[in-house]
Length: 337
Image (cartoon, rainbow, N blue to C red; front, side, top):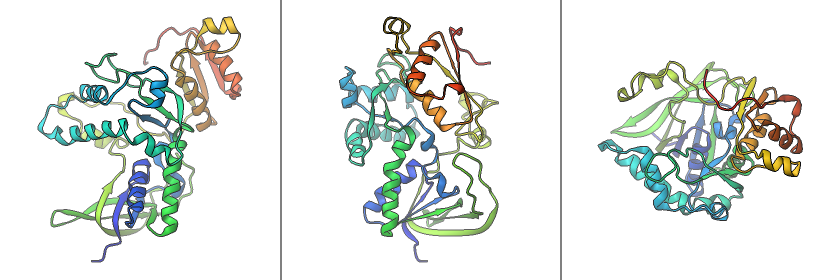
């Protein structure tokens, strides 16, 4: 049977776009299959903060952050806790990715026009030292333009490859099965879904109007895993972790009517001295609150914490939609209810 392409990529999110554009640039023919419509190209990365893991970057060095491949790998291994035979390939992947993040990753992105916000955040900071879990130094680099800023270079490259005939998009094609011949995955099959022009982030129709089958030399599954299907998560929950949680959250919900942002990093002393908003750390919370306001224009945002008055001044200076913000300055800590 003739092949439809050299490679089939399942999933039109950021991972799928990265894989497809690299394949197309290598001169191969690639098909990208996704159950959503064209308006959702880029997947959930579009909604993200655009945070990137980079090691020993110019942004870190400018801020006096000392980082290295060895330190980053030690942090990663401390978090992963690889201790089983089946951890061989995950461990090798981790070693390769940390090397990528400490080497060509930033330059590769920059050559595509990607830029980085000059403040490095400290996500997953863990135990505050290199012998425990988490990042022992800040490594969270925010893309200029957040999620859309990291999606744009790859969407642009994909459109160029599409125009040249090396890349084909098949939207509203849901992959339900992989075809295997002599132990080799050589294709996909599934259902064609009815066209649906629902806006990005909303649930689309699952009405089936046909079926399809495609063949290729190789198939890359970049569908984001099973995190969005809580039933599958529970079925595959590791026994060593005990019972799966009764309540789970994942991805982008169909509807957001309210957002809570916890304060942190604002400086009341500098605010009182200068008469203008000032921050000392965790500036990302302010930026994230503004980004959430943009992404969910109907939602109200509650900014809670002792420094909320400083945040109010900062948001006013930045032209935030103040009628949608509520500032609460009595909270001293946070807990889940």
